[in-house]
Image (cartoon, rainbow, N blue to C red; front, side, top):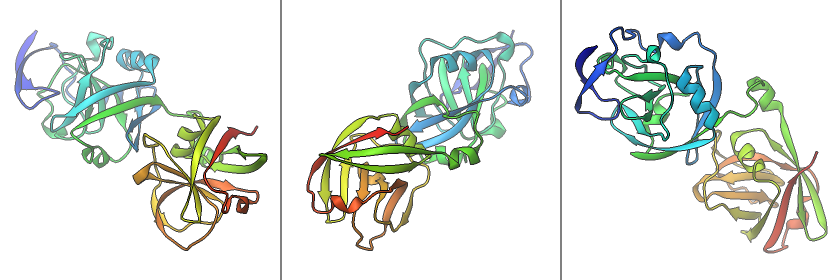
Length: 283
């Protein structure tokens, strides 16, 4: 065994570590041709796209999904304990990383998202690369110092991106003795909402234009923009976690993620007041 001083995967101090006698010198190269499974990393309202390879550790993690881990930024990575430790093979251990790599750090039994210092990483060992973030790595650098990350399989793995964008969810919107029909776009926010169905929400009649429910926790978003709306549109307002049905127009533009639209007469909501509304899938 070779004994080296190297930079810790989860800190900026030098750690005395044992390295394998034949560490992989080209970080990430052993994973480029491996089978990939698409996953998402959800941090609050932000969703990052990534994949897991078919290493032993990645396969172990995949079998546990969904799972949430708490990670802390050490400067070049987000790192935190994953219990029980992931299984791995000695030959999968390597030195160094590529920015965006997902890894299992053997020394600390930690799940790691590397985001910086790729060029000086070769002296750091005991790393099993298990995947990679496919979104812009700068999105990771914008996160808080400590984050909770939910790791999930990506929905509709076997569909192309175009197929997913063309797909939609048909739902029923029910209140009192009335039932409206709506179609939701297939995006990360609507998928999170549809997972909650059927659900009844106590909605507030606000500003003479909208029915609104504020979730206690943020829904993920992937296409927020500041724009206007059409009457009948269902939108999500991220700053207040607001799920909103727009039933009247006042010309305002605000930050929103478009979710879909009610196809039947939404005007029946005008002036109805606060009311419980039930949402359920329509097959």
